[in-house]
Image (cartoon, rainbow, N blue to C red):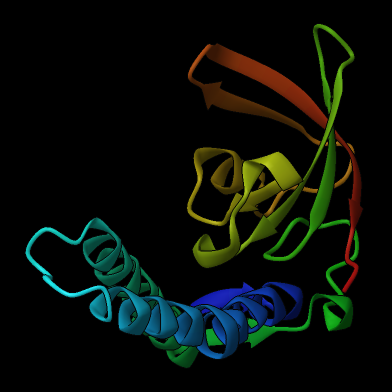
Length: 158
């Protein structure tokens, strides 16, 4: 099965891939050449650090290329699920006890970033929300215990 990813997430990953290939890869190749020019490679810390950095860059390039080639890009703005929560939805929740509000977008595993409010479709929170509608209450098992939320908004934006 192809992993879902939003078009915005795919764009971010492609930009990172382009940066790695056109900026970081050439910079590390230059650093390796410069370190080589300093002579003895056995005790050359700059050389070993640059080689290690090159390994990380090449590994990330391979990872991104693989993920992007197997991803199914979904244009969230074209989804028409109404008030139902499906992949790509931006969901506004209110904690039933504290009235604290949180907003999450359900995205592919590749692009999840909790700091930006992007939660993976495979996460417990997303799994609890999928299929529910605006106005529904949902119980979520969180590390700090069970929390109950009300879905106060569902929207789909690119």
